[in-house]
Image 1: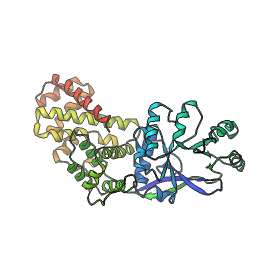
Image 2: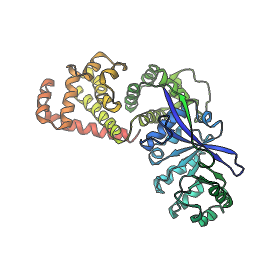
Image 3: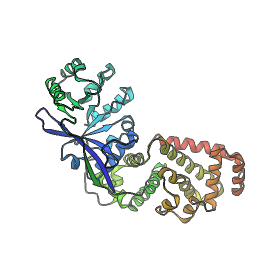
Image 4: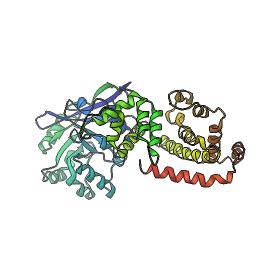
Length: 404
């Protein structure tokens, strides 16, 4: 498949290119698409850093990567090599205590930080000791209105200043005379589109890996076996290992070795990155949470009515909304999943034990009490036993949501 990114050059005072800002694109059209910030950053990382790498796009120069509130909270920076990038903190990030702590963590991990579209407020003062670059958008803060703050910032020799959205010779000359260190805008160069080939992967397997990782004692053999079922996922995993983010102490000779090297927390973050990249906006993310609750609810019901199907019931609930999340027919999706026939049948509404368990869960969720009483008859259980099981499922899902 084709993936897209735009790069815009950043020039120094000698008009030499010193870095590129990378801008997410999802088509050959050179503008930012209407998607959530976190998803855009996650996809930029998946399609570029974990493909051929940012150095390939920037010809070895520094890459400025936009990081907004969601990306900062999700720690997506962990998938970017600190030596190759400048983390550009978007203006939508508030100067709060929580964000300050996150920025301190990045600074202490040797990331270079920049403030984008900077508008001075005293709350930013404590952040300045962490910052290497401040960008002023001259359309938001015209140069003739920021003379005082520019002079104040220039007293700190560790902070460099960049003027962006320069469109005319007059813009550039004024910024130059004010002592700006770097320059960016249409006067120099418009963003240039770059198209690359990437490999598509089986999102269903991602969800299966997600399910295994959520377990209290995940099985590394199962996880590595799932990665082995999809060459594209295996490639992304090995690209992560070799992306410059982590120091490599020895050669990696197997996927299991790669997973052991990453460790449980990093694997969780990696799978979370993929999920974020492919769930647009709030609705699919909420659907994922519903799936996790369903999975646990199905599992708890199965423990009472079909103990031999506990694992299968969990997976049936987990995948029961995959068609809504990916906007593809379930019949097409189940063909790509390494599941027993009884799970596939239940997901395709063929009546078996797993289907009846899922049917009880759906009826309970919807508050269709008449339908629920009909559904529990087929499993020979009392509907009064369901409320505590559902509450356990919600609590369980919430606890894992906070850990991934």
